Length: 336
Image (cartoon, rainbow, N blue to C red):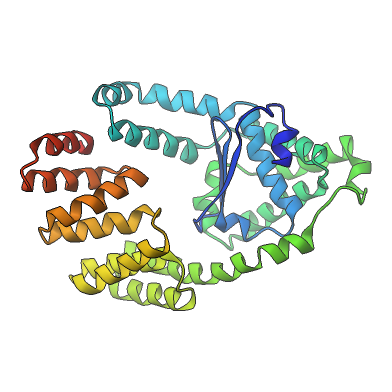
């Protein structure tokens, strides 16, 4: 919020959030919604580096790069959006979620990235962060790009935020030209020690997510037994993390271990009722067992949290099974 207050659009309702994803990335959406992923946050060394990330994304918002991308995405989806507006309800939300995904996945041009870098540095200085944090951030990115140590960077940040050595050189030149004295002024903070202390628990939890990430790779390769072992190892290490129990439940459902699957999924829900996945998978479990009245509330809850076509399709069939044709038709339209 220190960055938001000194930006070119301080009246926007900015919301900064951490997304529980191992993919190193950050992104901005129109209207001031800015996200940094856990996978990027745990790799940073100081508050100044975090300010560089969030200042950069704030720059995308103030320069209206996100709005331009949103307009392009909406134009590409105009026919589909028109149909969704006509049908109303959660189908419109599903189409909007698709537009949002398009924004996040497509990223920005190199010129937009450079402009956001410079705006981010300006905001850092106005908020009294050491602008060298921006250089150290770019150096971190460059090491990851050159070394290829973390392939998730290619999946995340480097795909949506084009990076080159030029961006690092430009950041150094910008600071040398405009903020050389400030970069050596102790009144402009790095807050490395405090940042490391406050994120220590997050970095510890990241170790368990690294194990679960290996499980995700095995799951995609349909090596379900091996994936289950990884998810159980992650849950053993960090038993309060809902995604691990949700993943265990998903594998057990595929293995037709319905009782054990339900136990794991309900534990995930107890830990985090706002996580859509265990509601969706538990609804799928009841749907598969023709327990349609039990499936409907779980699938509906998953739709409230994140509308998806699979949930809509199962809801349509469950409503049809209990004789509610009106809701069956409504969700069938959403599932198309």
